[in-house]
Image (cartoon, rainbow, N blue to C red; front, side, top):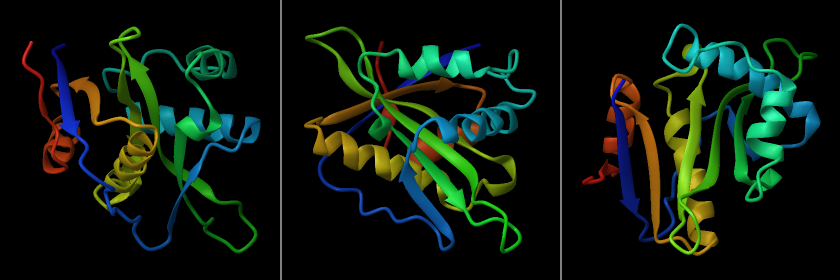
Length: 168
């Protein structure tokens, strides 16, 4: 599986807004872990990153145990439930992380995922905008990411949003 490395120079706030009916919010705490895990299953179902189902311990190891992690490093896209008394549903997520090692580490976009039944509705772009704005607020001038070359829809999204391949 070929991995693509992409980057974008950050020149100012993205101005990206979520589509109507979608809220972008930071990770709220332990109550969001199960919803994030369910989103991961749905988003990567049958794909390269599917692997075995993750547990709350996997989530803890990937995020909570990382030195760069804060609740403000994960954004969730949520919509209202289908009926008036159902809770909001998490339909997307993205993480602002770090890649490389200090002093050459960089802001890195990770784990962009959107539930299959909500793709191509502007949610991915809104999540990317949230990460870009946060990276700028934290002093980054560039944002890097890696993705699988076979994930053509993701590659097209990143290119449409101004990300370009990194020469290796």
